Image (tube, rainbow, N blue to C red; front, side, top):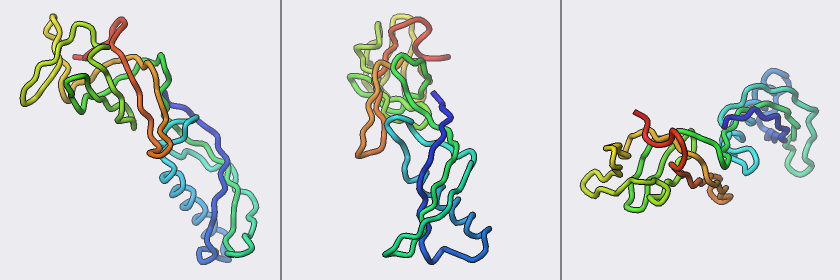
Length: 176
C-alpha cells in the first residue's frame, strides 16, 4: 500500500558546503536531504521510501562544535510503500523453484509464494520450469499474479522487507 508520510529529519551540511548566499545553502540542504532519503531505503514502520514530495520547513541551523558542520532540522512529506498482512497485491514472477516462486511487487523483490499455498498447482520441471493447474493455468517467469499477503518481515541489516503470500481466496492467481 502506498502511504503519504510527514517526517522530521536532521540534515548535516559540511562546513565546506556552507555559503553566504541563502539560495546555495537551501540547495545544499535539499540535495543532502535527497541523498539521505535515497540511502535510508526503508524503515520498519513506514516501508520503502519512494519519493520526497515537499519540503515543509527548514529550521534554524545549529553548529557542531568540533567539526564546524551545521545541523538543520527539516520537515518534509514523502511517499512510501509498505506491505500489510491481508492486503491483496499483484506481482511479477521472477524466480521459480521446486517448492515455490519469488515475486516482485513495487520495490519489494522478496515475496515468496510456496507451492503449499497454490492449491491445485503442480511443479513442471524443465529448462523453463513452471507451475500448472488442472484448468491449464500457468505460473511461469514473467507472469503477473494476484495474491494475498499472509505475513511480512523487515530485515534491518538489508533494509529490506520479505513477505509470504498465498493464492487461497477468490480471484487470486495468474492474471491473463
